Length: 169
Image (cartoon, rainbow, N blue to C red; front, side, top):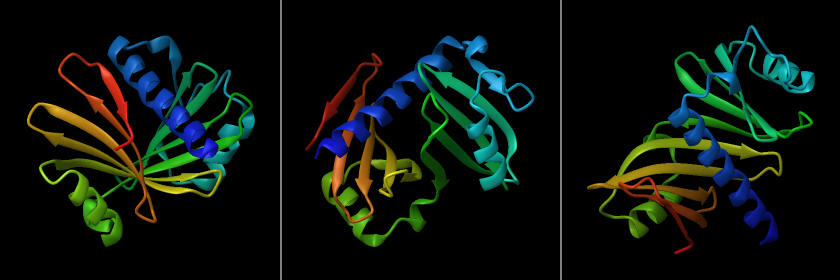
C-alpha cells in the first residue's frame, strides 16, 4: 500500500508539474534533444539506447526529476527519471481498443457516462503496469489509473476552475 501511495504521489506531481509548465510556457525549463545540459547522462543514454528511433526528443526538468518526451512512428512516449538519472517510468499513448477487457470493464463499471479521450500504458521501475485514462463527461474531466489486473488505484478530477481533487472510489 505504501508503494502505491508513493507511486500516486510521483505520478500526481509529474502531472501537476507538466500542466504548470505548459500553462506557464516556461521555456527555460524545457530542453530540446540538442541541449541536454543539466540532464543526467545516464538518462540521455537510456533514451538513446532503449528508443533509438525516437523523434523530436524534448527534455523537461520538473523540480528534481526529468522527463523526455518524443514520438516513434507518430506514437507519443514519455520517460521519467529521478534527479540522479534513475529510470522511474515509461508512458506510451495507446488506443482504447488495445486495453485488456478486464481493465475496460472496471472503467465502464465505475464511469459509465464518461468518454475515453486518451489512454496511456505505463510501465514503472517496480514492474507495475498501469493504464492511465483521460475521461470526459460534460464539462468534467478525470484522470483514472487502473492496474493491469483491473485494480483501480486513483482518480484525479479537473473542473472548470483547474482545481484538482483526488479520490479513491
